[in-house]
Image 1 (cartoon, rainbow, N blue to C red):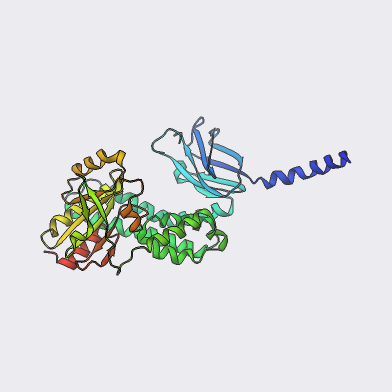
Image 2: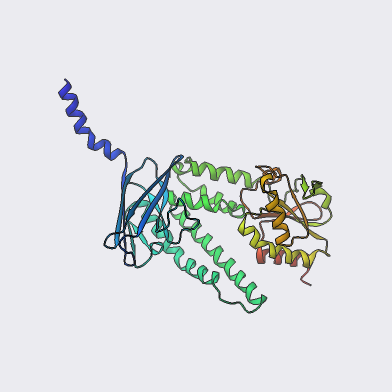
Length: 369
């Protein structure tokens, strides 16, 4: 009886190993040098899985097991445990099978193939690549001669960014059963302005994807985004200014008010501040003001005050300095920068308008002169 049990166990062993979901990643790059260190990182629940290997004869390989499909990344030379920035990296989807990364030069220019999810990812990257290349050129425009050129560059950047977003939605709508689509929507849902389209595309996804953790988070963000919508009356709140004095949003009734959610540590927020400042200076005598709500915490108060000074922000600044800002929760803010534009009668007339869109909206409301 014992011999029979052992025989059955030995016969079943290969099937059990297959059930553990084996994967391999093989990479080939003409610019890779022997000895280049390669790092692999991905998560399994709360556990961070990390591995490393070295390039030999222009190639490298990782082998491992996983329990749950997940997106991870490979990076070259920079150890992700210690590096602030990864100079050469590439995202991958961890799933059973042989994943292939082939590159004419750097890791970041790899073409991925070999498994269903990574084949889907390759299709998305192919659609996005020309837009990413265009965006890269706009990010490095050389020396812009004047403000007109700088504003034109920002306008072109916004157009390309919108094209990138549109391509992602096209992909998700055409691949409703792909985990790649779920993660694409998860990223798009971080910007509240995208949430109406995210909701429409999310509805097309398979039930299997919707009940995954990322799907539940998208559902939560959609619900948060509906707390405040264009056409609703603004919800009043009170938060302290930099001197600890309570300030009510309703104190600014009878004015156009841009309620701006930001933080000292948020780089996109800081980059948008000059644009908000320009709009404020242009329309502050035309019944318009800004009320900024910082989501900085108490331990970060000095950095918040310093950021206000560095960015030369003259309008009212408030915060409750809590871990979860109460005004941000009230307005369903899940990512920053974010804003709502309120009319003199207290109605929300726009959400998340930045850059040229903000300038155009104010020109429409208060005139361009």
